[in-house]
Image (cartoon, rainbow, N blue to C red; front, side, top):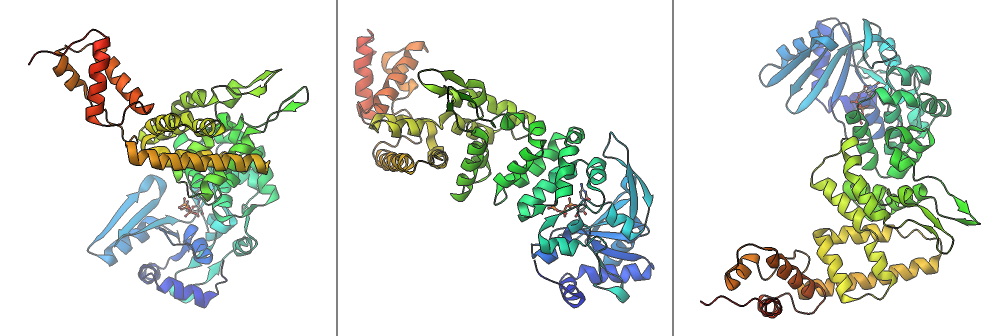
Length: 479
Ligand code: CTP
């Protein structure tokens, strides 16, 4: 956050030639005109600027059309009469124009009833004080900041608060509840107490927001520097239970006969943070969020073993497509990647817990393929034990697994496994028509390679096939 006086603001505005042109057009039309919202906020926060939003006291559409005429060649103006807005695109820059307005909302929709208003009416209807800053563009007041809700103070104090009573702001447009948590997470700001309480009170209103808009905000939280903070806020306010019940269901600790299991929600957030620290991208972060998602459904108490979550990785793997579909996440290879990591996330731990054999590592490499490195990152992130000795033992064993992965990969090239003897070759040699026996032979070759019985080479594999075929009573066709 930097402090900007009018002179500084003028210098910054002058770096974007578009503002001078808008200023001249606004003065010609005798209309008050301001740059508002995220653009101004980001000037103070020294964040890269994106699209420009301009509020005009009068018709935003008239203003955009006049600007279009002034800019001439290469300009594209789109008018949205229903919304009273217009967009000007010029040399890669987008400027959105809207007339200053007052808005009132009905209970069951995000569509407001709109009337003309003053600049302050317009600022009041915005989501947060830090997004309600305006800078005048008319020549006589060029660079003057208009900040009736003390947005700059809130930027300084790193606080998210609403200009109006937060119950009204959130009830008017419940998407703002997600935006509130998203901004707090992205900017590492605190949510002011009244605003935080209102999130909880108004949480049920999130139900009128489309899945696409919710996932858009969730995406911004996930790719931020500290996504766990966003999920903690979503949980605290009760929003998580409404938008992502499977994740909220991980929270809680049960105790039977004095034996408790760990809280899987807080554990998951720790794993997420660890993955972020090790440079994990968006989909590895999703895998971290979902790695234990099958635990509530598999939880059992066994008097001998204590709490168990048998097969939670496989149950979780099966839950991934439904979760992706419901959350409007992509149902393509990204979903498959997350599914694979959730399914395999117990494997390196199981290997490291036991004797690290070549065969187990080769099989892991075969199943994980090119995602093996991400899987290892996830598994290391998953070790959140407070017992330092235990933690160190796992990490040391993982080092061993990693070393074996490197050695075996060099020798056996399992990562992108292609059977060294193909089905076609088997058909030709034994003059077979397609039949289950071909699959059987191929599986036997694959297992022999993964178990280290034969090297991953054509001649050795062929010899193995010939022997196995003979045992099955097959003989090569005469050439
Ligand atoms: N706005 C709002 N309520 C919303 C969405 C937007 O009041 N539900 C207002 C805010 O003043 C915001 C401006 O419209 O600053 C522009 O919105 P948008 O471009 O969505 O957000 P930015 O604040 O620019 O931030 P980001 O691009 O990170 O979403």
